[in-house]
Length: 134
Length: 157
Image (tube, rainbow over the protein chains, first blue to last red):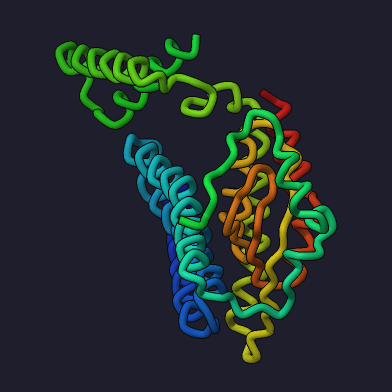
C-alpha cells in the first residue's frame, strides 16, 4: 500500500464520518421538541459534518490552491455559522416563542441576582444597547 | 501599520484565490487591494474591531483548543440524539464574560454558539444569555472554564 492509497483511504473515512454527523444532525432536527433544541442538533452538522467532509476533500486535493480555498470555506462556516444561529435564536425569542425548559437558571445564576445593578455596571467602552421593546 | 498589514493581507488573499500570476493580473490584484484599503479608510473601518490583527498570536493556541472542545461536545450531542429516550434537559442561564473588549465578548459568544449543545441567545454588555441542551452544559459555562480561556486569548494581544 503506497502513501497515496493511505491518504485516499483516510480521506474517505473522513468523508464517511462527516456524512454520519450530517445524518445525525438531520435525525436530531426531527427528534428534538422545540426550536432551540433543534438548533443544537443542527450545529452538529455545521461543525463536525462540514468540518470532516472538508477535511476529506482536502486530503483528496493535496497541497494545491484548492486546499487553500477549502480552508477558506471552512473558516467562512466557522465565522458565519454562529452569527446565523445567534440571529435565529434571538428572532425566535423576540417573537416570544418560549423555550421548553427543564431548568431556568436565568434569574438565580449568582451575579444575575441583582440584574438592575449588573446592567449599570456595563464595562467601560460598551455602548448602552438599544432596548428590545421597539 | 494596521493599514499596511490589511493591504498585504488582501493582496495575499487575492493571490491565493486567483492562481494566475502574469504581470498584468498581479498588478490588477495589487491595485484592487489598494482600492479596498482606500475605501476602508474612507469609511473609518480600519480599527481593532474590523481588522483584529493583534489577535493572531492568541489564535494560534485558542483555535486548536476550541476545535477540541467542539469535537467533545459534538460527540456528546450525537450520543443524545441517538439515545432512544432522548434524555435532554434544556436549560437557560446567564453567564458573565470577564472580557474587556467587544472583540473578546464576540469571540466568547460565538465560541459558545459554535460548540454544539450551547447557544448564546442574547448579549447585554458582558452578560450572555445562554440556551443549553443539557443542564451539565449550562453548569460548565457557569463554572467559567471557557471564559478563562477566552480571557487568556484576549491578553495575548
